[in-house]
Image: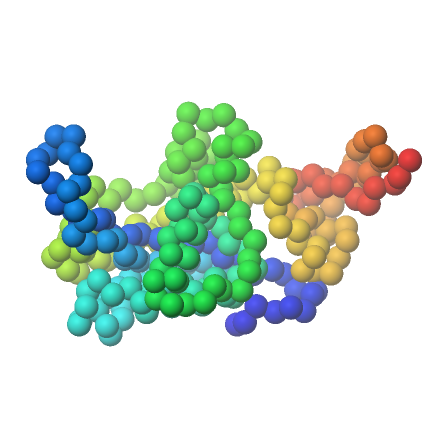
Amino acid sequence: MKKSTIKNRKPRILLYDLETAYTVGAVWGLYEQNVATVLRDPYILTVSWKWYGEKKTQVMSLPDFSTFKKDQRNDKELVQVLHKLFDQADIIIAHNGNGFDQKWSYGRFAIHRLNPPSPSKYVDTLLVSRNKFKFNSNKLNDLAKYFKLPVKIETGGIDLWVGCIERNDPKSWAKMCKYNKQDVVVLEAVYEVLLPFITNHPNYNLSLGTTHNCPNCGSSDVIKRGFTNSLSGTSPRYKCKSCGSWSCGKKILR
């Protein structure tokens, strides 16, 4: 489904997460060593995603593609899947997306000579948590624990990555996919808790062609609750009964 330019439809919201390979380098020892040279650059191992509002969470890994038999480190076809997802999305959600997932994705697009996907709005749940709250940790799994939500799957450490990358172990790949898929399940749950706190969320009204729906979730179940005053005028204030977020109506100029 290609991203539409026609209004009066819900925006397509993509939640996604990447798992990547490690960098392989040469060192002269084990303690506080500088890497003498990089022997192998990292690449994408798995991509998991979910369209918000739909039930299915999906995941794909390198062994799912025909090129894997010839070159186990060629992620071009997996990156093409990711590029297509970005091209279909109006809003993209990721945890630490600004610092990791988004830059990783665009870096691989450039490596494989793919043009930039059509523009989307981004929500980074890590930045939302840092800006709005004071927790001991803003990691995705810790947020899930604070909010009493489903948590991430334990990987067992670096051995899982070694099993996939060096040994091509089917059980390791299956566990990696399960781990990546659960990350998106946790991401969605955390996003829904954070949603009413996101004051700069992309506005649903621009896609729906409405004016008074909740800008964060698109619900029409909003109630008027007082006014917000500023030096230049007064704006009616609305509370969404679906997601709990606040918004303001059109300003009445003084």
